[in-house]
Structure formats: C-alpha cells, structure tokens
Image 1 (tube, rainbow, N blue to C red):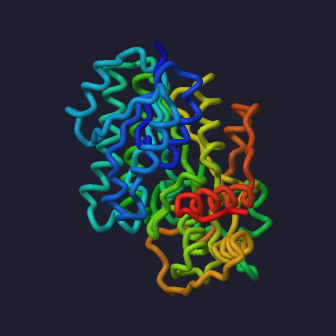
Image 2 (cartoon, rainbow, N blue to C red; image 1 turned 30 degrees about the horizontal axis):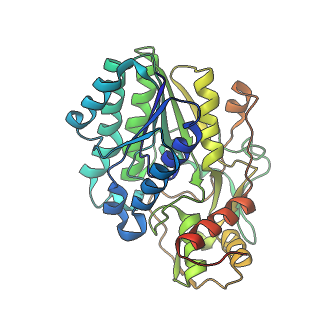
Length: 358
C-alpha cells in the first residue's frame, strides 16, 4: 500500500496536500488537532475544512493527534510503517506576533514537533520522502538591509542589485539578525530537517514559503493576510496595517502551486535540499496594492487604518527567487496569478458566509 501522511491536514497547505494526493496514493492520513483555533480564536477554527475533506475524499483518514507528543504519533507510524511513502509536514504555529505570547508553545509545535516527526519517520518509514513547510522568516530581518527604494505604492529593491530580477535566493544569510520568536523556532526545525537529510541520508526537503495563500485559508488578523484582508473587505470589518506605510511587499503563492512543487520533488527527491517557495516576480504585491485588488473584486471600500508600529522581525520587501527549484524541476511553473487567487479566496469566503457570488 502507498500512503501519504499530512500534518496540519485541516489547514491551508495540509488540506491542499490531501486534495492533491488523494488520487495518487491508496490512503492519505491526516494529523490535525485544530490547534489553530487555540492560536487565533474563531477565525482560525479549521473544523469546517476537516469536515470538507473527510466528505470529499473516501481514502482520507483523520487523526486528532498532537505532534508535540511522541506517544500520540508513534501508534500511527507503527500501524502504517514502511507503507508511508510521503510525509508533508505542514503543521505549525505560524504567527510571529503570537509566538512571543507563548514561546514554549511555539517552540514545542514548530521545533519539537518537527523533530518528533523526523524521528518517527527515521524509525518507522525511513525511505519516505519528508517535506517540511518552512518560512522566509528564517532569514530574519536581513532582507530589510538590502538597498530598498520607496515608490508610490510599494517598497522595491534597487534595480542594480542582483536580487532585483528574480528575488531573494537560498544563499541569503539566516544569521546575525532578528528573527522573531516564531522565526527562530522555524530556523531550528529548518536546520533539523536539512540535517536528517545530510546526516542520515533521508529524503528530506525544506520549502521556505513566502505568503502561502488560497481559498481554503482560515485567515486571521495575526496570520494569513490575504485571506483575512479579503474577509474584511467582504464583511466590512476594520483592517489595521502595521508599519511601513502599507508599502511592505510580499510574494504570494497559491496553495495548489506549492503542493505541486512538493509533488515534483517527491518524484525525484534530492536529500537535504532547501528551496525558496513563493510567488516570486510572478505574483507579489504591497499591502496598499492588495487592498486595491480586494476593493475591486468585492466592489466594497475597505475600512482600514495605519499603525506606525511594524511587527517585530517583519519584512519591508520580500520576493522569493525560485530559480533553483525551477532549474532542478523544469516541469514545474506557477498556475495561479494574484488576481485569480484573490478571486478564489473571495468566492470561498463568500460561500462559507452564505453570500452569493457573481
């Protein structure tokens, strides 16, 4: 039997992974205990998404296990063992604001949980491909010291810099910088995943995501900015921009495009590899530009205000360079641009709210 195991399976990337892999594996196992609701309250509740994928995929099996507890993971790995061919580890505490409230919880989920998953894989399914969803926050605020230029609606890197054409590559330093507590816990996990590939020879890969987004995101104020921004545009709720005049730039990758990267890696794994994974120059926007797009799609004016205080360790400008991955896997490319992605997010939120879409 061929089995794919997905942690954080009711979240954005986890549920996309379940959908993507359901027709490629005999069984897809999901591990998710809805900790996102604890992090972000009702906005973060993923129960609706768990129910959706359980109804949609007959070969999906859900476990409400906590990745921080080996005694909850080990029975799953013992039951399925070497039949597990692919592991997508997408469970995380994803907010750098929230992490400072409970560093033990943040590190427990992000770092200890990842080590638990790696060790269970090494002991029970050592030939499995292990894919980890890391983050661009492992670079800390080093990107903020690049030569940036303020334009009318965004910050941009100086066109003379090597990063101007394609964005920030994997050689950008992760050292000597402020990461946020979240960024530091993800660095620990990121390095450990690399090490299990390089030291033990396991088929591990790190994908350092930009803004991961899509229609099944339970966006909240502290995480999932495009989904939460669109939700505010639809409902009329107030939105607050934190720092940088709203000109901070993010690249955005649709969850399907990211999981398709995983699939390409699975078919030809390169142990211990690291890839940046975002929208790159194909799909990026500033906060102000995202607001304009949300207003255009919804037909509503967004109620928003500025806070002069930026989030600690936040990026002023970040665009991922995916050249390395595209060189290794030339059959992959983006499928969903920014407008199409935002339109899907709008329609998904409107549907869950019981609103009609055009």
